Image (tube, rainbow, N blue to C red; front, side):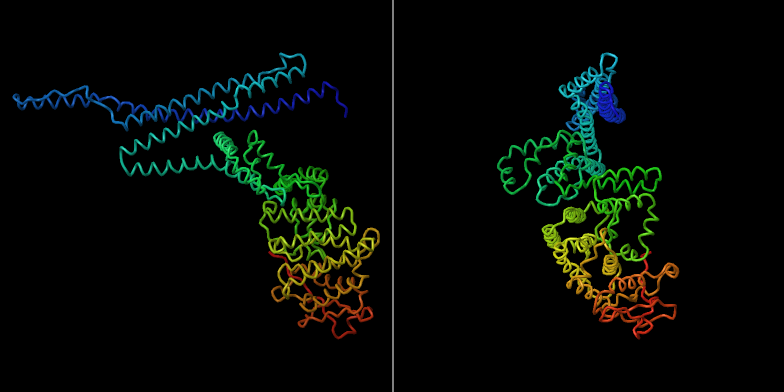
Length: 621
C-alpha cells in the first residue's frame, strides 16, 4: 500500500501523540492516587494536632483549680501565710514540644505534597492542550509537541512529579515519629507495640528502596558475555525514592576508581553497573537486550517466555488460534524451538523431528495432535522421561543452556560438512563437561533427529564421520543400570531408532547403520540389550495394560514388531526369547532372524513369543 506524504506525517503524529497520552495518563493516575491518600492522611494528622497543641499552653482549668485550693486554705486558716501562685511559670515539656513539631511539620508536608500535585496536573493539562488548532500543518503540530516535551524535561517537571509522593512519605515518617514519642509518655507497653508496628513498616520501606539498587548492581557486575546468560529478573519495587537511591549510590561508586579498576581487571562489568539507564523502562530494556547474542545463538529468551505464557493462558480460546498460527509462522525460529520452549513438548522433541505444519496442527487442535502422536511407536516417545527442570523451564539456568546447545546443534545441520560433524561432537563433549545431563536427569540428551539426519546424509564422508556419534548413544543406553524404569528413555530411543531404520530420507537414502560394520554392530548391541534387560516384556510394576489397548493394540507389540521388521537385513541378530508368563489370550507371533538374515516364522520356532505379553506401562494417571 502506497501512502502520501501527508498520510505518513499523520501516522507519525498519531504515534507520538499516543506516546505522550500514555505518559501523561500514568502521571495523572499517580497524582490522583496521591491526592486521595494525602487528603485522608491530612485529616488524621489534623485530629492528632488539635489535641496536642492545646498542651503547649497552660490549661485554664488547672489555674482555676489552683486558685480554688488557695481560697480553701485561707478560709480554713486566715492567719496562714500562703504564697500566691506564679501564673506565668508554666513551660511545656521538651517531649511535648517535639511531638507537636513532628505533627505540625507532617501536616505541612502533606499539604505541600497536595499543592504540588495540583500544580503538576495543571502543567500536564497545558502540555496536552490541543496543538492542531494552533498550527497549520502536521509537521508544526509535531514540532510544537516536541518543544513542550523538551521544556518539560528542561524545567524538571518529571522530577517535580516524582517529588510529590516523597514529600507525603516523609510526612508519614514524621507522623510515626511523633506517635512513638507520644506513646512513650503515656505507657511503656503501648510504646513497644507502636514501635514494633512502625519498625516493620519503616523496615519494609527501606528494604524496597534499596533492593532495586542491590539487584541491579549485582546483576550488572556479574553479567558476562563469556557464558550463557541466565534468566534475569528485574526488581519490581520501582519508585521515585528507589530511583533516587540507585542514582545516588551509582554516583558515589563511580568515584571509587581503585575498586572499579580492580573489578574490571577481574572481568566484572563495573562501569555498566555504575552507569544506570535514564529511567526504569530503559533499565528493563537493557536487561532484555542482554540476550542479543550473535547467530546461531540469537535466541530471544524473553520473547519465547512471553509466548510460552500467552500460549498457556490463551490457546484454549478459538479466536486466538489464527493469531498464534500467524505469529509463529512469522518467527524465524526452528519448529523445535517453538515446540519446546513455547508449547512445552520437550519430551517429544527429543525423539521426533518437527516441521512447521506440526506447529500449526498443534495450535489448531491440541487434543488431536497429542492423540496422533501417541499412536504406535509414539507411545514411548510421548511418555518418555522429561527433563527434571522446574517449570517454566526458561526461568532456570539449566533450561536456557539446554535450549542454547540444541539451537547450536541444529544450526550446524544447515550446512553439513565433515568439519561441522566434528564441531557437533566437540559441542556435545562440552555439554557433558558442564554436567547438564546429570542436572536435567536425562541419559539421552542429544535430539534423535540430529543424529538421524547425519546417518541418512547422502555424502558418504559425512555418514562415516557421523558414526562417531554411536558411542554417545551407547554411553547413554549403558547409563541405565538394568531393568526397565518408569519413563525409560531406552524404549523411546528404541522407538525412534526403529522409525529411523525403517524409512528413507527425502531423497531415498537409507541409514548408514544398516550398511556400515560399526552401525550393524550397534544394532546388534541394542538387540542384545533388549534381551539382556528383558525390555520386550512388561515390568512387574506395570503388568496390567489399560483396557483401551485391547482395541488399539499394545504399544510394546508394535515396538518389538517394528524393531524386528526394521532389522531383518542384519546378520547374526539374536532371537528375542519368549515371555515366561505368556497369557492364554490370542497372540501375535514374533519372527526371529537366523544367522543368514532370513526371517523364521514363530510357529516353527520353540522360542515364539505371545505378543500380548510384550506391553508397555500405562501412562501416569
